Image (cartoon, rainbow, N blue to C red):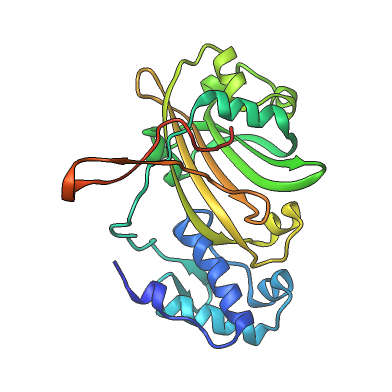
Length: 266
């Protein structure tokens, strides 16, 4: 792991905001290895800051090994550094709770397309390189206030069982099961990130606002990946709850998650 990638911060709150937003997009896979970043002027307009501020943020990303500048070819994303070992916690989620959450909120479909699976999605789901997936981005709202920004990736052969209109009106888990998918398990991780321009607009928050980031891979009874979810949530409107149970004997007693009690979303 390159420690400098997470330790170097530029001077100034605005430059840090730009740096952290771009860093999270790179390490999270939204900006692909080798992808060319927009010009300094375009980034300045996007983030509502000066070019000097953008330059400071980019200088920190260069020092952290996340981007490289080459004369005549622009600024490109470098291979993402390994995240190393991270403390992980299991969140056990029941499917009925996911479906119920879908019923109690409304969704607005922002985009819908078929394309090759990004590398980080293909790797997580066990798909072949260039496998086609359906990519859909939705915003979920409660009382007309947006609280989550969800991007789902579903293998094309599964996604063809439902339409764009279906996805705009019906929870994805219900569509998968209606199409014959037998869902068995899911693994999800939760971290924090900052809102980029598009997400900030969709969630009605400022660019650079703190968000909860949830990644989930859903598998069927044969162990095949059937959905990859990248969810971003406003922390003022969403929380994860996890009841704990005290187990073990003597000095070995410790806390463990109580299965089937935490919240989630499909």
